[in-house]
Every structure is written in C-alpha cells, then in structure tokens.
Image (cartoon, rainbow, N blue to C red; front, side, top):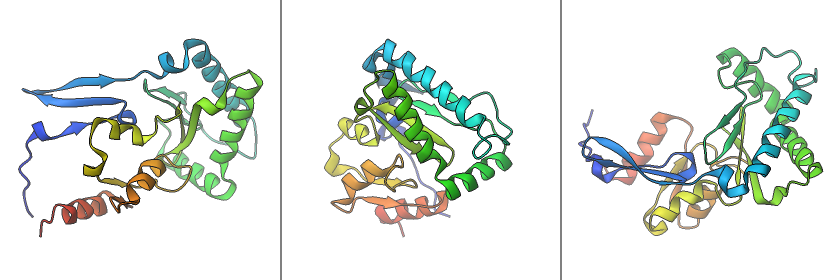
Amino acid sequence: DEVWAINLSNLYLLPCNGTQLYAWENTNWKLHYKSDMAGSIGHENFQILLRQITLAQMLYTNDEDYLGDFYLTHDFIDYRESLLNWCPIGRSSSKKIRSKFVDLDTKKDARSEMRKTLKALLSRKGFDTSKVEIAKGGQTSLDIFPKGWNKTYSLKHFNASECWFVGDACEKGQNDYEIYEMLQKEKRSFKTQSPKETLTIIDNLLDFS
C-alpha cells in the first residue's frame, strides 16, 4: 500500500457544517472560527426549540406505531453549538436498536413525520420555522440549525471553485444534499457508500495510481 506523507499545516478541520474551523499550529489544532446557534436564533427561541423537541419525543415515545416498543436511551438531544441533533432512540442506543429504527424509518418514513410534527409544534408556539432547517442526519437523527447553516456554510472559508466534496447523505432532505448539489453543477461532488469508496474517490481525484 502507498503511504501518504501528510503536512498537517495544509489541512483544516470543519466540524458542525463548517461553523467551526480548526487549523494546525505547532503541535495542536487551534480554533480559528466559531458560530453559535443559540446566539443566532435568540435564547428565547432556543428554549422553545428544546421544549418542543422534548414534547415531540414524548409523543412518539408513547406511540406504539413508532417508538412505543423501543428500548430508548436518555441522550436524545445533543447541542453542538451550531446545531441541535435530535436522535429519537438516543445517541448511545445499541446497534440492534439502531437497525430496528432504520427499518422503521424505511417503512414509514418516520423521520419525515417527526419533522412535520416538530414544525407544527414550533409554529403553535409562534416560532418562525422558516428561519431554521430540519434535515435528516445520518441514519437515526434529525439536525436542526439556522437557515443557511447547512454544509455549504463551510465554503465561506475557501474559494468554492477549489473545493471538492464526498458524502454519503446526498439525497434531498439529507444533510449532504445542499453542498452536493451546489458543487455538482461543476462535477466537483461525489456520492459514497463506504470509507473504502471514499478513499478510492479521493485517490482518483489526486491522481495517485
């Protein structure tokens, strides 16, 4: 196998859709940029959002057609500063429970229904849902973030014409969709189904053979 020599000073880490940016300095990653969701939408709206996610969680937990017979874990909300991640089964759920939820989501489009419910609950409280996006994250979650804070946000840090993207959630409603579509106009985005395929795509882009 070919060994790549990596100069860390040429790399950037862009967690949370690029609303944070880390660069390598000396011997550590240093934070150079950070945005905060609660501050952006307002702390009162943030509290409304938290409470309505909790209410939606309770509704689906008690619904036998959805989560009524699931073994759930406690950690269903994860605040990542740039977004709220809602994982109805809990982030520390077992592989078996995750697979069960994926099957439910495939059969009933459960996360789309949960998204509709959350939007309705928010609207009832006077929350302007046009100011946030709710996208499917991974296989078991919904990501809620300010409008425009999807993965295209990361392009603000670079010249978009020099950027390439590889992702596995590129369909409409998934959290790679917007950046995939934006860069696909110039054929600079790719769909992947595994880490191995991702490496192959990058390998071909860099013309290593």
